[in-house]
Amino acid sequence: MVFAPATVHISPVGDEVALVSATRHSGFSAISEVVTPRAFGCACAAMSYPVAFISDFGHFARGAPAPCILNRCARTTMATLTFDIETSALPHDAFDEAQWEFLFREADRLPDPAAREQKRAEIVQQLNLWPLTAQVVCIAMVNVDTDRGQVLYLSGDNQSKADQDSTVEFVPCPDEATLLSSFWDVARHYEHVVTFNGRGFDVPFLYLRSAVRGVAITRKDWIGYRYSTEPHCDLADQLTFYNVSGREGAARKFNLDFYCKVFGIDSPKSHGVTGRDVNQLMAEGRYIEVAEYCLRDVRATVALYKIWKERLAGIK
Image (cartoon, rainbow, N blue to C red; front, side, top):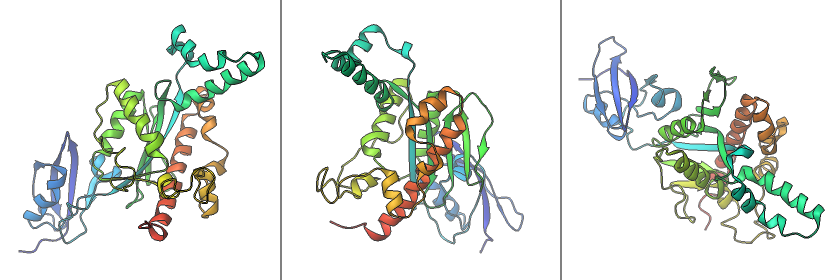
């Protein structure tokens, strides 16, 4: 018996997926049961439905209709996730006197008052970069294969926003724990992840902040073996050939903005916002501008990844 292509409505249920309904285009209803994500394709294939497992933000993650367009079971095809985070220093009163003494210890050893104050100011700027002194205020994610995505951001505004082409949804979160939990709920459905300097910054930052907030981490293998692109491809490692020539050699590390300009990619910093502006933007309640900047970082990373994959992947 041959069935017409089906449209499957799905929704996440813990580590499983509820197949709420599957209706053939001919109008006949079909199934209603719960299966694991990896078994999703097989369950439909067993019932002769030509479907594909789509792990996507607008489809799988949020329970919207997922059009089944392939004539084979695609349960082994796992999508690739690209993400970036923005962080902001915790307020001054989050730390006691002993913690501030520890943070400023290096500066306070300097005999010159001017040099001491300059060093203190530098340390305050660096608070954004440490997971014990800062929090995650935004995570932008894009599925490399479908170009769909989601931006989770801290905001007092409960209104969500879609980007101009409606492929990305902006989701406000009331607190960091909610933001992190929502991120890990999405991340667990992706086998591959791509970042720029994620092994050195984003991933350990997410791990430690999740531990601080008591949020369950669904992917604990993203630090991984540095000299492998699976499951984590860190472009900062790949474009320096694992730092083969050190800080000053031919393959020295540049920032994302520099790589983008060299490879003809729209730089995320070309729109007037940089990571240095995040603290001020958050303080002024300009949350959506932080979210949009974070998404531009991810879009640039996706474009850079596609260039690396086409032209440089496999070099040993």
